[in-house]
Length: 114
Length: 110
Image 1 (cartoon, each protein chain N blue to C red):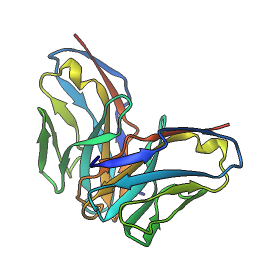
Image 2 (cartoon, rainbow over the protein chains, first blue to last red; image 1 turned 120 degrees about the horizontal axis):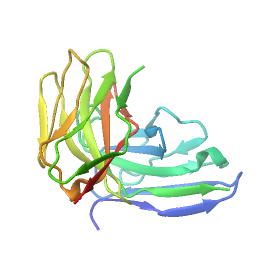
Image 3 (cartoon, each protein chain N blue to C red; image 1 turned 90 degrees about the vertical axis):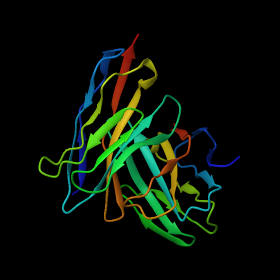
Image 4 (cartoon, rainbow over the protein chains, first blue to last red; image 1 turned 30 degrees about the vertical axis):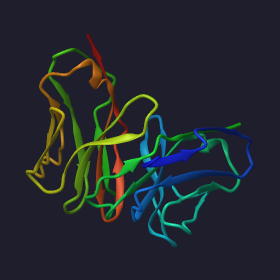
């Protein structure tokens, strides 16, 4: 299917485990983003990528790792999950730069860290 | 630093009522401003945007005007419908960073 997809949609894990959230887009958009959504905080940018092999930190990058070996994929890894990382994670993509271009969001991954 | 502040919800209205959701921002220079909408269980969708002062974004009956003098981007709709029930996010982008407000939940009753 065309668009932007995330997997898994729901994940429960334990403190200290490594977790990888997947994001895939079919538009060949240059830019991709990861956000977390927490009650009272809206969405906060974790990392973004301007192109394959180019990534940069957002507002809350600590505890997360990203990679982008292919334009269409942008996985987010929690190397050692903590309870504070319980959240809903959204991936997004855009054709152009972050400044003026529309971001298209995936359906989200709800992650619970016990 | 840059930030967005929007009114807390929930906002509950009857169908056909007038809607205003306030949004103010803090940023140096000239950010771009956005309203996104999130329906239950879904990701965010762009509702409208404005890229420079005095621009008016509009879509699906919603409007917002970029007011540099008051650093505001308030969302309005003249007559809401039950199908408008959702969470609305104000956002800005500036210097390759994107900032969202905390969201305002709108409930529209028939």
